Image (cartoon, rainbow, N blue to C red; front, side, top):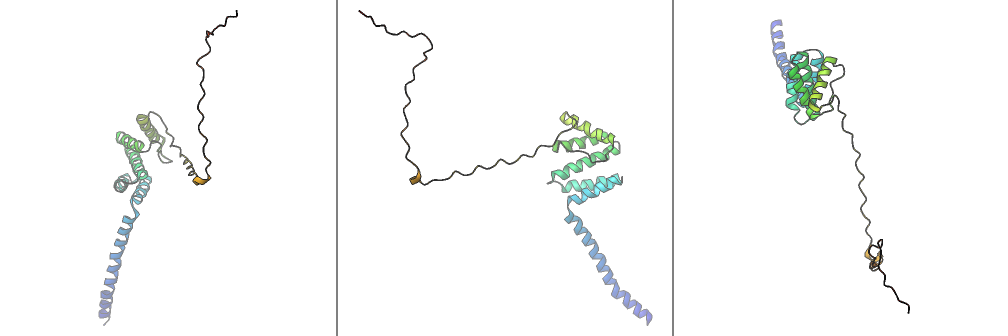
Amino acid sequence: MRLFLLAALLVSAAPAVSAGEESAPATSAGTAKDAGPNAHLAAAVRLYQKLDLDAAIAELQLAEDGAKDSEDDRVQVLIYRGLIYSETGKLSAASDQFKRALAIRPWAEVPDGTSPRIAKNFSDARKALWGMASVKPPQKRMAAPVPAAPKTVPASDVPAAAPAAQPSAVPADTSGSVDLPTVDKK
């Protein structure tokens, strides 16, 4: 009897457990899709900070695939990929990634805490691309005030215009000598 009850309990509990297992992956998969490319970028940054560079590169690829519409995300992906390549000794590839990021956003910077050696590589890439070590971001312009629309006045309120005066005759250049007629007195 006990075996029968135990078997019945296991059979009834098995669908509930399997339903819970099926719903959990669906939830996490839905979350990964809804989170967007920033989630992959954030994961790549965390992996880079933990020095799991291979996993960080894989996450950066996913972040790049999803960041087609976001210039900020593309720049960050390129910078972090350059940082990883620098860490692994692939200096030429790192320089290429840095230059691609700087071509999009010339005033981009490496994250705080980056080693001075890698920061110098980044600065060298900027010099090679733009000819200078640092570039200031563009100033935000204040929008010009929109002029007010001219006030319309009914035609009955407008005074009649006076006729335009004719310009008077202006003598030509009188700075030189002028021959005046002479009058004889006899």
